[in-house]
Image 1 (spheres, rainbow, N blue to C red):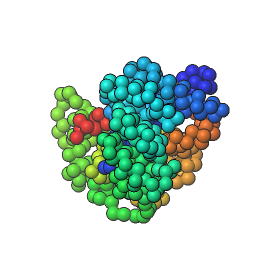
Image 2 (cartoon, rainbow, N blue to C red; image 1 turned 45 degrees about the horizontal axis):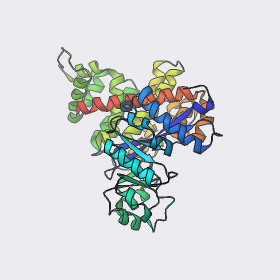
Image 3 (cartoon, rainbow, N blue to C red; image 1 turned 180 degrees about the vertical axis):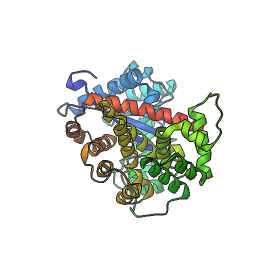
Image 4 (cartoon, rainbow, N blue to C red; image 1 turned 60 degrees about the vertical axis):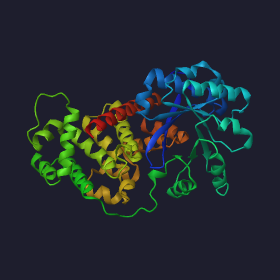
Length: 415
């Protein structure tokens, strides 16, 4: 990152889900780290930063992990040739609401469509005067908090005259998601999936119980025989374990002889991570496309990297990864976090981080959560509290995104 404060940007990556509640893309958001930097100026600067950064510095595949990338585009950028550097099959260009949809813009949109780009109207308010642009764009994004709930069904109905997907922005509760779902919205942007309707204890399926038991055994440093026995009692887990070993050690000459052999080859560190991520991937039909899995994986890895940057020992980095992963289990199982912490017999430091956001791990978890929801004003004081620089945070984010993309590729092989 450059030294000038106006050249430093926070990176946000907001998930976009389809009607199956599977992640289909991310909106990439860059905002100036200088709170005095005018928002209008920031649009121009940040959009260019997204493009040059995502392409040159990080690699689009690493940032998006095979999903679509939604990028805000201001008028100057829309008309520039810089856009043509982007991979057309991976990018959705969002025309900011400040752009006047005049003849020049319509003409440019037609050119971009011919090149293969997908186009979206951001924070859009329906208007009959825009019928020409509706016949060109692929997605219309509607801010459901800025639009009357009573008006939404009629807006959706009118937009159905064109072959566009309609996206509901700022969906923050399950009730909002269900209402928009019933209205016929195709896509949803927001963090409703992190907030269950009612937080109460529910029945956990057998495979999840077995994985929680394995996680507890690894936390308590159980013997190899005890871990092996848990796998023996759960044939489905044993089958998945063998798939995992074969994908991690592809091309190995040595054949897997027994479950114990597979466990030893994989190692407790790989095994622990596989279990943690499997809790999310195996909980319902969405599997590796479960939005909580995406959030948990990136959150855990990001915490781990931030700890490693400080030079802490490997054991503490493992605790950081576990803290990130476990921080979403209460949402996954609709159980109070207190019960989960007690059942897993976690250390006081991890427990305090999960329950009260206390201690070094708690502070980092708080930081990562604020970054996820792009609450950048809250991020700045947390960076000071955690003694993390903006450059360190951005570098850790990009490494975490890249790691998640590789995990997803490996998981697909294991499937």
